[in-house]
Image 1 (cartoon, rainbow, N blue to C red):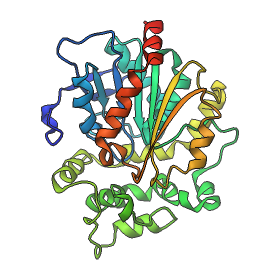
Image 2 (cartoon, rainbow, N blue to C red; image 1 turned 135 degrees about the horizontal axis):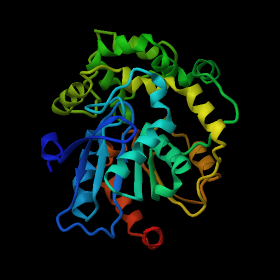
Image 3 (cartoon, one colour; image 1 turned 90 degrees about the vertical axis):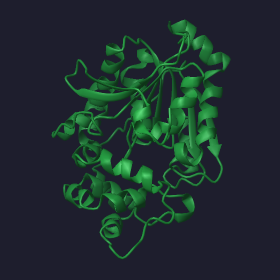
Length: 334
């Protein structure tokens, strides 16, 4: 597997029982030992399976089957027009259905960004499918007791202004018209982060033709063009995740989802100390709801941990999976 060559990975496309067509990487080691738990990796926004390119090979070489889908609305996976299809409940049902198709009863779920949020909710919607959980960059937050529209959140907490923009209908066409600057604004080193969180800032940046965003971008030109090609179908699907606030709240309230993750579930959380979207208070708060939580802080690393700290993320996950607790959990769940 060559991280610079998407074609060097094992690609599959299947229709799952929820009716959606999913494209995913299914990397199975030679002489696969089924006693090792399969890993399913969930990417965030704006990413694709390609975001895990530096981890798939090393994890596979250590005997793990690594499954990495393009999430709903991304890449070659289906892109429904109805935003409710992207609610976390529905996405979790899709992941469960994909595991069913692959005849996998339980797996280790690993998520980054929106994928981390989804992984945390998977532990609530489908706890019986989990061996262990790994969350990157975005810490666990429990279901809310009251619904707060994203626009109201942006008024109360100005740093959420970008989410209000992504949730708006206007963002779709504006981002589609400026794919390169859009990606370069988001995929940045911590030292070169641009101010985009407040209302009006993000669209002002990506439509500004006078700024060269290449300096400080984590993506080289080759990888940038691969990402641009992944979004050729448009941004409706990826942005729809930000348009599910009320649907998510209503589904979770109706199901009476618990605030706490299962007490016997071992969870690893990895984050960068320079990631402004992950303040220390949020990490401390996660401990209130997760009994078996291990945290790893990556010094001087920002949001894109799989790119900025490739080897460290790979090794920390392997260390977590090799722990006696996970081995015992795997045996008890087989």
